[in-house]
Image 1 (cartoon, rainbow, N blue to C red):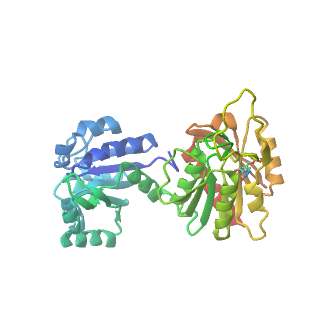
Image 2 (spheres, rainbow, N blue to C red; image 1 turned 120 degrees about the vertical axis):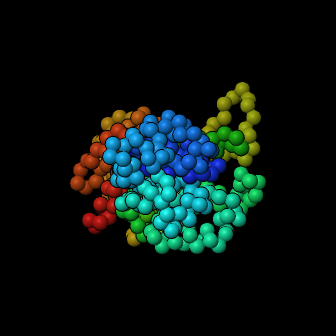
Image 3 (spheres, rainbow, N blue to C red; image 1 turned 90 degrees about the vertical axis):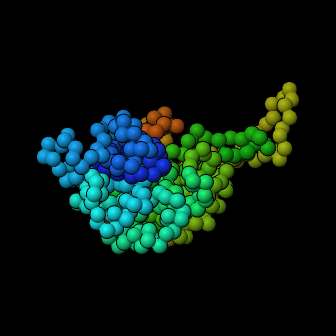
Length: 395
Ligand code: C5P
């Protein structure tokens, strides 16, 4: 996972959105967190505890009098073992209980007994959400320092449309990760390029680089989690926009440069992760070139170097580059860092990174080499953000 594995107590209350919490459990587990599920009796009518037991790999608790806990105090034991409690879905009734400190079942009692943060993802019909009593209760939760995640808006299981639906599992996952992340870049504006660029040859063909965009998107996500205001200038990728980032889609290197230069004055940190095509097509054809017996001649011209351009600005941002090399990685990377006059460069073996969810990065700065090892891109992105924050603080 990310920074470090967390122990999440996932509380499930009675609502049809409980089925989405199965996916949420899977996302947490996949990211390396440990998930302990506790359900209300009502929740177990929507999705059986066995589903959550299978997904979390741990027994599920529903009963305050559960004999499986040795000292007979599951509400204390379970809440003490958690780094955070997330209630998803949180029903109107459960929110009312939390707001008023009522404890008449295991889940409400362990929430009252907690000494860790509590996050709540409401899920209910729009009239129930808007009900003044519920709104008062939500305000009380916020006053008590409880994080309210959502709700979202849209189609509801009852057929109505409006506010009150639970956020999607991927959104709840992101918000929980963000909740845990130290706010190392709070107040910083971060501009990131990611993905490949696409340089058209004609109306249907083009030159591009192998790049899934996953590393750049992971960095954007980690920067958002660290509290930064993030703009992501992205070449063509199939990836969803990281929650909380502003995304600008571009095609060619020149569009990418234009988008970067338009935002660079308001940027504290520029991270160039994009695999920018070195050349663009000079004799681009507006229409599809028809196939003939003779091969067409494609004339190339050099693209602008976006990173070097930004690094050369007199009052420019703190610049971070990437170097994907297929051999002599560290030597070429250090040469590149000096040539482009950038304080920090992340180097990786190209073969190890392309398309994969993992990568192996070494950070290079004036102090030398800092290997981050081989790890999921999400984790390496956090390591990079920590390193950048450390360098900014030391300036
Ligand atoms: O020179 P090279 O392409 O190997 O440098 C890689 C680094 O420079 C990456 O950070 C990449 O995003 C950036 N770059 C750029 N504009 C280019 C070429 C590379 O910003 N035209």
